[in-house]
Image (cartoon, rainbow over all chains, first blue to last red):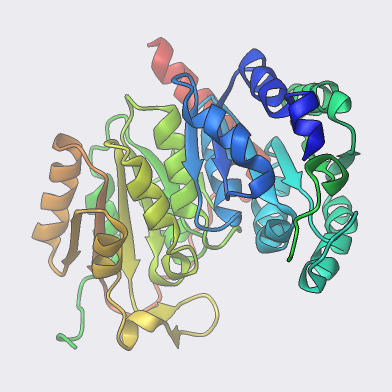
Length: 175
Length: 196
């Protein structure tokens, strides 16, 4: 986790969310999102919406858009598998904007073999659904990438995902 | 189980939408989309033709974004069961302007009338209460439906009602099926309402 002490990238993401007017932050927790979730929960200008499963996030963000608010959706890579039909048959069918921030498992130093198949599937599955997918592995790339992809999401009504690599987050230790 | 329900689903939805005022409506795919269309197409209806299990979540995001509007989700028992965790998500946010009405015919009406779990042992009103939505009830008469409508218009929620209806299919009444059109006209109607 050395990168997080060198550069506070979760604070940078939170700053981008504020600059770009994100009001609803829906999430299923992941260790990699812990600090960002805390920052959003503590922010009176944002509504943090914990979900029981990631597909609820497609509904919440669609409803937020209908009501005139911007949202962002945080999840772990395993959660991508939980929301495929909602992405396809709600978000994509209606061309709702979607910004997903996905903390990765199943790559770069993974120690749990059960995480490997979904981790490998994340990018091709999302691309098959028509999302643009950008992966970030360096702390000093996080802010510019999130800013560009989030901005594009709401200026073009497109669906986009930023994957935060375990190279950035640090691989989970099993010992 | 209780007596066989006799309420006709279209009469129930008509009662829910009677003199709707500024009510915003989200429907669940299938029967409740046809029911709401049959009651009269309105740009302030967001009809789901897909996304099974997400109707309540759409209503939640909308209710949070528009706290001065009442939001009513009208969905079916099968759709509600698929997204039942969203009731806990609603309870955690506790939006006072959100009401959820489940038109419960105990069937998957679009796929051949197979029994849903509410035909066996499951009580969706109890599940909503357990999720943390304290205003939760099962309704079996039109008078109760009208009282529910009056109650959620007057009293802060969230509100949840299961309305037991007869199992007969009511036939398809199709609203526009282009999600992009439904989305944009909804937002335009909302904006127009806020200007007036």
